[in-house]
Image (cartoon, rainbow, N blue to C red; front, side, top):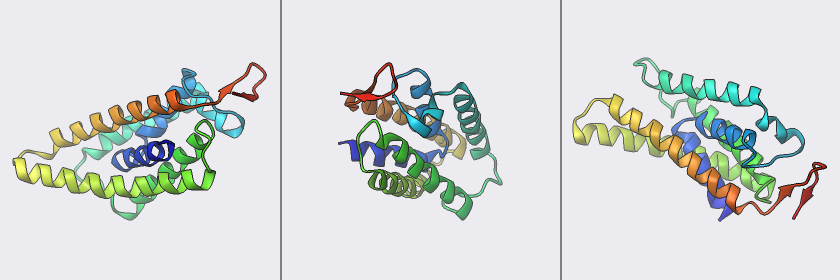
Length: 169
């Protein structure tokens, strides 16, 4: 179940590279997910601000006519990296193997990038509608699915941080 959550969150990264990490930082900041060690940066207001602004910038940039395809090298690379990062971050509270979580997050990022591109182009063609409404719907799906998956991760997390910062069951 937890590996599926990581893979699906990676797929959300394939839709919008910055959305899952921004939502994850909000969850950490609001103490819905707990991270220790270097992962604790996610709970800082600075991380929330940076990744939220990056996500907002991506929503705007995605709508511009000269934006490269998400399946092209720079966009796909970002989706792989941030999909893997999401997996690495969630490996701790979900008690997952670090490498498996990173690999599945990255794989989800690739699948989400190509799958999202395929669905979006087919919907625009089939419905004979402009790209903008479909792109906006894709934004909503990426946000909503990221929130849902991270809520499930928080609920299914079996570890909690004690007052001294150590993990307790």
